[in-house]
Length: 277
Image 1 (tube, rainbow, N blue to C red):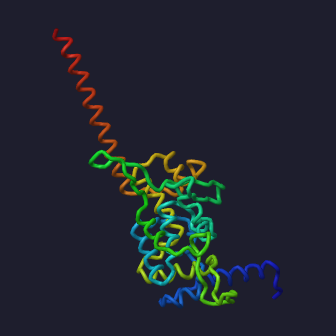
Image 2: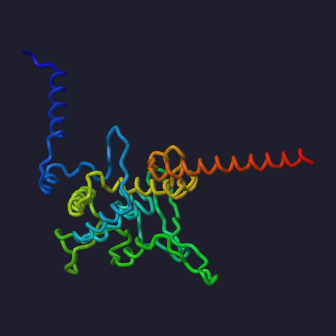
């Protein structure tokens, strides 16, 4: 039987489909070696991306620190807390010289490559204490405590000293950015180490942080301001609907009904009082 170009194309597609659908082994290291690319920086599929919780983001960071990568451990936290895309952090766009600089001592600059926006994100505010004095209130103390513990390897915050490769004139290996493929490998190892579910990736840390803003009842303009989104539609992709939001909406609805009922009752009482005079 003669093989047509269409037959070759079908055969090629079938082989590639089979390569991506083969079952993963139960052993974590074998699974990572088989396919280190799946579900680390981005999550694809027909359904809605499941966001992670704040506890899961910190658990992933703790696992990366335990594996010996404290700088990389900053990525899930920055993605969740400051809403920077993880690929931007890994690429070196989160820098020490833009962290509380002299001209903006209470802020950090967050770069978003999709929009080109550079957002100066507030890190603290002045709050009044019980004695009436104004004191600095840190907005991200857990993240900043971890930043304070990191040695500064270079201008980018997230770097590493390679364990292999050429050494410099001083006999030391020079710090460098962490390759995306190695990040993917380490995140999978950390997720297994922490016992986290497969959906907990660097990408969903940002989804989780955005969803937390919805749970906190922030307005759409406030969410856009923090996340650097240009349009409301872009922000809505990330803010997932949750039980907290539904409960808040139901409570707000009930409050409105009761307020309206009370208003009508007061109006009826006033009308009745005028009629009795």
